[in-house]
Length: 393
Image (cartoon, rainbow, N blue to C red; front, side, top):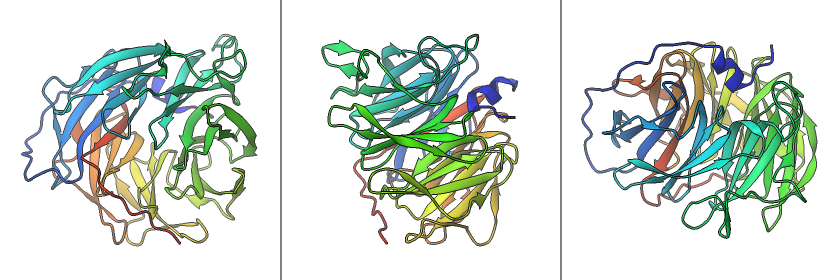
């Protein structure tokens, strides 16, 4: 069965759990300050956590969870400068911008209605100047009148608001349209670290739509690339040389080399995952790649060969157990010390410390941490301007 993440989530039902932990933060922050996790129930929530910088434990902020500004939030991403959070509300067809205070609390600033309907995923470029959103249906199509999806590009202003300064919420134009066509049921989108290329994963078509980014933010198609059976998540490495896509139906991760012109060249062999992989992330140094497996309730871990891009399972434990139904995996973007998963069926967030020498994961103190009902995805805010050394071949 080919189900998008939002479609699969809609089939599940859990009871919202309470909040609170017995963890005390200690020492000065030296990795990430805050983690934000969207929850679809009740009524769209954003769980906001303070991170214990020594142990990686999560402490719910006062006032959390906060309203997401819409129904069924399925994804979120923070701006590179750590001042804004963008939340995608699937059932409301909105992207909501929040300002992040120095104490981690968030305040809604702007809500933009997307051109089409049922948005599923978003990605922001490293410069923080463009936000990319994929929608299940482009204008003129819906669940009652199925058709192809859309990729929407929003300029990001200096104050974090979306759209041109003279016309807020207005996306980059594609002729007379406010979107760029992609395939059927786009489930994920990724902009590479260089900002040059953007890739959208079309789950029902089993393809990837590739685009080159122009100076004004406009997109030019560089082709459609076949992949697996039911691709559902995508990530790229910090050198913009490799792309990794999970295939939920075939229990595999498929790798590609990014050619100089942006075309995707498949690596020789897909990499085995556990049951129903649905999220993938590369660590910010480009050494390891991690996959959350929804039905197996675990995380698969791999080392990246920096010459070939091939992924080899990390020695020792082949998988790391998390709570039920992990939907999204997050790696600490500041120092690559911590890994978190949002667990949809468990209404929790699982946390690990990442061994930088081996890539192995160790559960953090008091994991898993409570979240509002049906958590769907997570974003992190870096503390200060930590320099991450990208490992080159």
